Image (tube, rainbow, N blue to C red; front, side, top):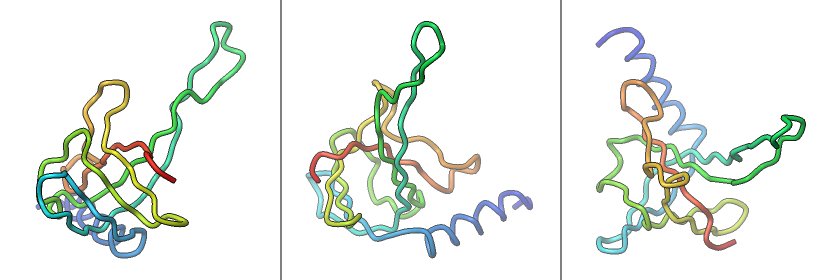
Length: 120
């Protein structure tokens, strides 16, 4: 294992141990299970035609998990329940038709799950 790969593993372990929370992952067909995830929220931005104004067009939530912790392959429509200032439910979904997941690092240790909140 090269030095950068070892560092990516170490960072992943630190992230899941200190910057993460317990979530419940539910695909609707199996028994829901708990995993550790880091929550992130961001907005996609767009400029107007003249380039003078930037407007948020979509807010999306991501959950970064260790790939090895996932018991199933994530699919659109799966549900994530998390206590973020109260219990909130999210639905796994891609950005504008893109895949619902992406690698969170070049060594495929962590997985970024894209989601939208369905209840507050």
